[in-house]
Each structure stands twice: as structure tokens, then as C-alpha cells.
Image 1: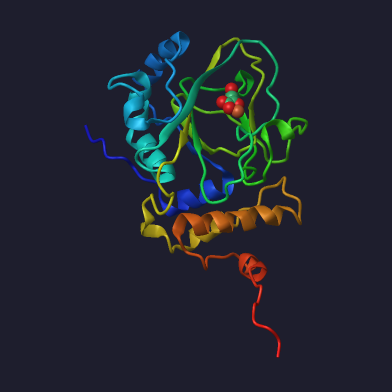
Image 2: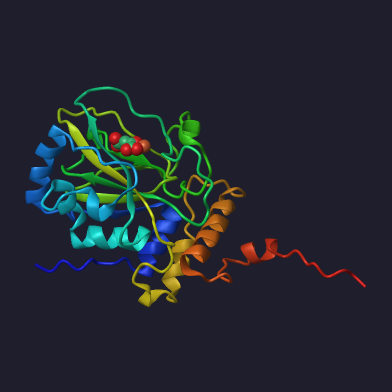
Length: 271
Ligand SMILES: O=C(O)CCC(=O)C(=O)O
Ligand SMILES: [Fe+2]
């Protein structure tokens, strides 16, 4: 079987930088989804913080089989390199007709990095309907600095995304994305398996860069989300410019001269 990782394109990377998430619908085959439900019910043994990916999950184990899927492996490699470390993993269960919606939060507690990021893989082994309490997330929120539940009182942001997906969907999110599990109003238990990864290499040009100069890349980076304020929303685009510079090494990259203009601090004395 062909197991070569399928790397992300520059357009997909730019979309991740703009949205803070990347969704791969039904990439996990039905047989593994079926196995996953029993593994997740039993619980996945803990892995120590900082364990290298290649040592974290034994050959043949459910997480290893998930991470070996070419599209999953390729997306992960494109975002954080070949051998990231495991920060932690968790099985998130939302019981039928149980509990409350989680408040909107970022998993970053205190995190001021602008040139590096962790990613979280979220895997849904079942079809997730609107009633089942899929993860809500706010596109384009990841670069606005908040600390964990600072955003908890925000309800129903324009353009928010309440996840509805086919079985076997994997979503990768930036550590800063605003998100929260919803209340499960269905008769079915909803499972989600999450792994957070820390990069161990500089996150530069790790993806398939053959389309790096194509115009759709910049179009993605310009994406404007409906909840953005007219003025402050521009800060999100500015922060993407900084992140794209870090990811590509192109210190001159800009959108509408925003980053260039505010870097102008002439040192030469007037004569
Ligand atoms: O259960 C969910 O959908 C979200 C859980 C969550 O917030 C997390 O894994 O950080
Ligand atoms: Fe969370």
C-alpha cells in the first residue's frame, strides 16, 4: 500500500494561516472508524508530554494507524514537521442529551508566539450531525490574542462554524482558534479524539511549495471573515502577514503595504 504523506499545497497552507483550521472530510477509512469507536470508549493510554511522535504510539495501535493515513501524515508534516512532540491527547465525549455547551475558548492559556504554533488534530469517527454537539469554531480567530476562556461570554459570532461532518473527518486547528464543544441534543454519544503537537523544527516551507507564487495564495491570505470589525479586523490580516513571512522566510511579503508601512522607522538624522 502506498504510504507516502500527501503534503499540503501553498494554497492550503495559506488557507490555514487565514482560517486557523484545515478540514479533511472522511479521510479515515470506515474500518478504522469502526475500530476507533471501541478504542475511544476504552480510553487511549496517556503519553508523556514531549514524547516524539515516532515513539508515542506503538505500531498497529489506533492512533498510529490514524496518523499513518497519507493525507493526515502529510498535513501534519506540512504544519509542524516530521517529528513533532506530543503535548497531550484526550478523548472528548459528549453524552446524549447531556451537559452544556462548552464556553468559547482557545486552548492556548498564555501564548504570545507570532512565528510558531502548535496544532491540534481533532478526529471524528462518526457522522456528526448538527444536534450531536460537534465542535464550534470561529474562522480567523486564532491570531487574535486571548487567554483561554477570555472569550467565554461571546455567543453566536457571525460566520461561526458548527461542525457537521461525515465519519472519518479530521480537522487540524491552530492552538489559538476560538472553539468549544456544543451540547449534544441527540440520542447518540459523540466522540472526538484530539492530539496536540508541538513543532521541533522551524516551521518553514515544510509543505509542497510548487504553487508558492500562484495568485490564489495571496487571495487566501486576504480572506475577510464576517465577524471582523472594520478596523480591528485588519489586525488579523497584518498578523497573517507576519506568520506568512515566518513560514516562507520572505521578509518582504506584504498585503497592501500594511506591514511595510509600520516597519518604517528611519534612523538617519535630519540634516
Ligand atoms: O469536545 C469538543 O468538541 C471540543 C473539546 C475541546 O475544546 C478541546 O479538545 O480542546
Ligand atoms: Fe478546547
